[in-house]
Amino acid sequence: MIRRIDLRGQDMTRTQLLGVLPRPEIGVDEAVQAVTPILADVRARGAAALRDLSERLDGVRPEHLRVPASALEAALAGVDRQVRAGLEEAIRRVRAVHAAQVPAEHSTQLAPGAVVRQRWVPVQRVGLYVPGGRAVYPSSVIMNVVAAQEAGVPGLAVASPPQKDSGGLPHPTILAACALLGVDEVYAVGGAQAVGMFAYGAQGSEPQDGDVLCEPVDVVTGPGNVYVTAAKRLVRGVVGIDAEAGPTEIAVLADGTADPGHVALDLISQAEHDPMAASVLVTPSVELAGAVEARLSDLVSSTKHSARVMQALGGPQSAVVLVDDLEQGLAVVDAYGAEHLEIQTEGAAALAERVRSAGAIFVGPWSPVSLGDYMAGSNHVLPTGGSAHFSSGLGVHAYLKSVQVVEYTRDALGELAERIVAVANDEDLPAHGEAVRGRFV
Image (cartoon, rainbow, N blue to C red; front, side, top):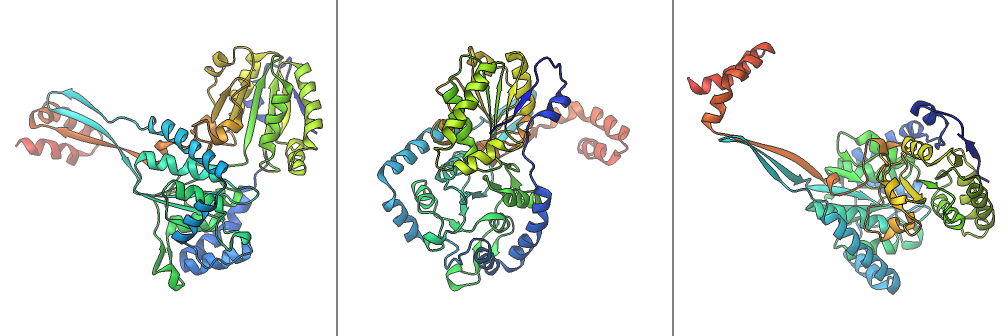
């Protein structure tokens, strides 16, 4: 069901590791070709294009592209009581964590009268995408919205695909999550066309749309399929984006102390997302590897989405990786740079402190990825495909801009004037120096 990669006895460079570790084959370049005309159509025809694309791609033609307030209220009133309690607890925990992320402004006095201040300014408007294909993700509503709210963003818009069973509106639980968070600008628009609507705005085409259906945003965030990823790539620069998200992935670094049942369940939980989801176990224990493989065989057939899970576990993106010891295992998971990294070893907390590349690290047997998906308080929108080597999970920083404020007095500038002139002249930009010297004539 899941293949083995044996790295024991091999002293491998990072380049060699990257060449043998499992990764999904993602056809973003092919998706770009399909998405380019979609974005052009949305930019040119606005709401009319959005309805046509929804009818063709989602199988439903929404009457209301912007979800009416009454539908949001009805969704909240109708949500299951226990689901609502879970969403409320998730909101509370995620809000507490993200409120603590807001950076403090600071001021540096370099000399008398020479001050540079660092301000953090939220962007003015964001578009938050919530998938709605194989699964329903009210948790993604929470992760996107709370981070933007805690950053102080004044304008928030959410888009999620229209559903046939919901009368052309997004899934009711997604609408309920928006209502709980106080978001009233919600669109029944999915896929690449939602990214285009956020990036370019969209004029209305029906009376219920108004003259302008949706104003453009400054930043687009949120996970999605390969077409959403391709659309983000194409609009990057027109707007900011969080990341080009690929298929979800988990890596588990475990030794012989780990419970094979726990490890197998966690590998399955990620494989459940998508046939291209990656599940990777890295271990020095041949006994654990065998026990996990046996548990997978027992558990996969009984899980609801067994066919999807089996395809993901059997794909080239998933593997059991055997290593000599935990030191080699640490080098392997650092080279892999997993979206989710679980450490189920003796001394897991100390080992976690040494990890340098992971979207989020889950320490010990009682911190499964599923906890982070919903209620740990951390954000579940995380870098995939190895991008954890250079990027971070979603947080308030995605919606903040750093602005430097420079304030010098006459004397403070005068102290530097001749040095500025000298450097400016050396760069053959004499007018720069004159802009300083001229103030003291």
